[in-house]
Image 1 (tube, one colour):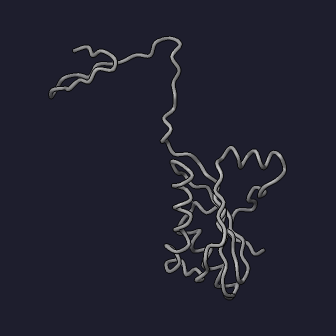
Image 2 (cartoon, rainbow, N blue to C red; image 1 turned 90 degrees about the vertical axis):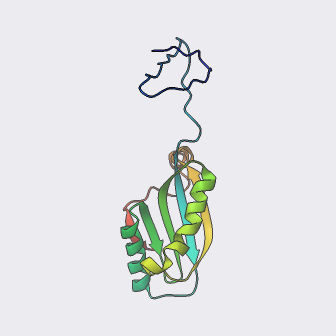
Length: 147
């Protein structure tokens, strides 16, 4: 087995073992910044009135197709969807959320409404808001409910 100096690049040949490195006492592990984190997403949509039964069925289909859906509330002309998204950063979580309604409009039979609101907050902020008594209450019961 060949030893490699820390920081030195090494190439291996077939069958050659890789050198192990150790962490000196007192060194701290720093978690890489690009690991996914959990983000709480609230997506608000609205548009022309649609029959309540159709809105409920469509939201239930969306929840069935995508089990990440935590809860949704709806009326005949607007809805709010809340869920947890795993993403590297806020930009990625927001991008996924902004595509959600349009990408699943046909497959779930969603009304042709537009996105009128989006909130994306990290897990720590969500729990801090709940602890301080403001912000959206925890989603209970989970599922699709009328306003």
